[in-house]
Image 1 (tube, rainbow, N blue to C red):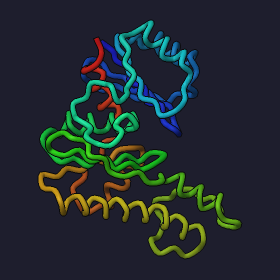
Image 2: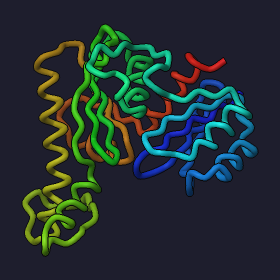
Image 3: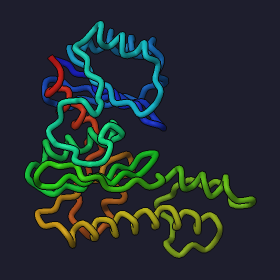
Length: 241
């Protein structure tokens, strides 16, 4: 049985394909049009679908999915494998809910910090009692590069280059160090903060650049680029018919 897990983020629209419980592949969608979604439904003929969206997508998409599959839209009212004893749980982003679900599913009974590297960097803490206590949100990599260019008169827009020197020697490498080394230091400091306060502690890094940052951290880190999709699948299994 095939399940399609859709992740509509601020930067990219993606889908993960599962066959029974096994992750098969991920897809980058060219656009979020109903025609694109319909084409995927015809190609994969999924029995189940789930949608995590943090954007204002075309509502026709939900109609397509619910008409052709056993469909679930991820929200604060979804059946989850953790609780959310925080202020205004209805405002928690769908992407964060999926990451927390994956943490509890794969690392039950642990104090889990899941760090998602996307348009923003999210720090999501779920304690060993499977309670999502919150965390933090900070600007993502591209946002940092772009903001320094957009909000200054002369700083250029530079791209990431993982061979940057920590001590920059010109404007370009100073900006790269400020963003890339800055993110590494930020992540490392956040991990140390939680590690000092909680035992039985586990850290998962996810997102397209997770592998790079995991290599530069002192603590033992699990890097899983598909962690959000795995969380969506677990939620789909708990909520779909």
